[in-house]
Image 1 (cartoon, rainbow, N blue to C red):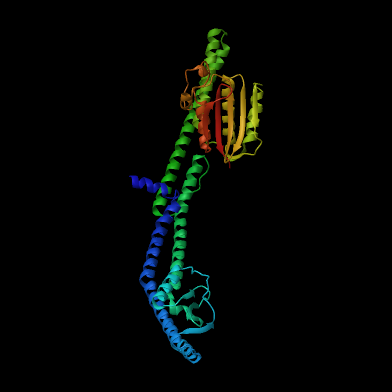
Image 2 (cartoon, rainbow, N blue to C red; image 1 turned 180 degrees about the vertical axis):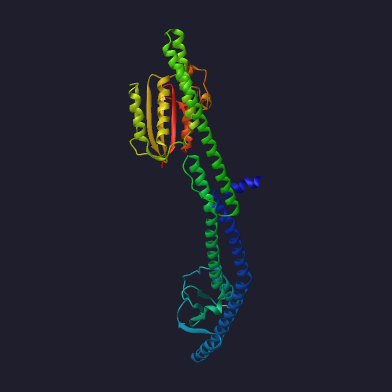
Length: 441
């Protein structure tokens, strides 16, 4: 368990990155192992032998020259070195060995040649494996000066090393490219499925067809079937509630007419009040049952929508203010539903408080609409309960108030259907603050 936990922490979070890692990592490990074995078994041994042969030839020529440093003997050695050893030899009288050191990019080159020269030569030497692309410059200090040898690179080192590395890197690049294209093609249907699920959760139209691997196609078909069942359920619920509402309105209207025609007294007025409350409860039930599926999506300017809700509320109560940051915030959704949420929160705040403040601000990828009042408020532990359908808290904030406890539930349902959320918090004014968070388009 501890191993799995630690492995999950270092693994990439995305499925694409994880799939790529599963395929590419073994390839890379295999390439590293093959490269190590190649250099250790083949290249290292062959290069060691070649360097030893070259160092032996240089030692032989140097010893022969020191034994007889005449010009004739040097010319003879020079001719033999070029003809039999593939070495170019030049005498630089009076010179000293260079002090600078130029290291090869592959340290094994210098290490192999240095080991061979130190074993074969008893004189000071210097070499450079980087200056010439086809030659290795080797110099030996002799009494008369410096003997400079230019040896073909393939005579000193195995020439297959660079070619092998090139082919290895090329094969790795080709395999990695194929893996990326293949994995990307497999991940796309899953990304489309996730996007469709998110869009469906926001109440938007989803155009999706099964595509990709068998498992992804099965998951897509299951999602589409689930979507159809949910839509049928919502439509049936809406139709049933609409039918019930329509059927109940007729007897309610008859009762209202009959009561209006009766002599007015306290009992008749009480009955009329009950009928009015019943009608309001019926409309609230119907609003909750309809949800967000009756309207169409559009681009909405939250600042303009909030300003409209503010001016509507000012007609009822002047003790309401609004603060905005002036930024543009466009969301995609159902303007009628979001406007109803704003009106609902404002009406709720005016119902419980004397002063109400609205606020709109844009932060990052979200826009926030806030309503706060100076009413009695709620305890923090009651926030979740207040958002549940049919919840009526028996506290000061709900005494002798109309409704059946669906107002905040409807607001949260609408916010969630748009990819947002409703949160409650204590207000700086002493009452309750309701915050709607909606994602920008």
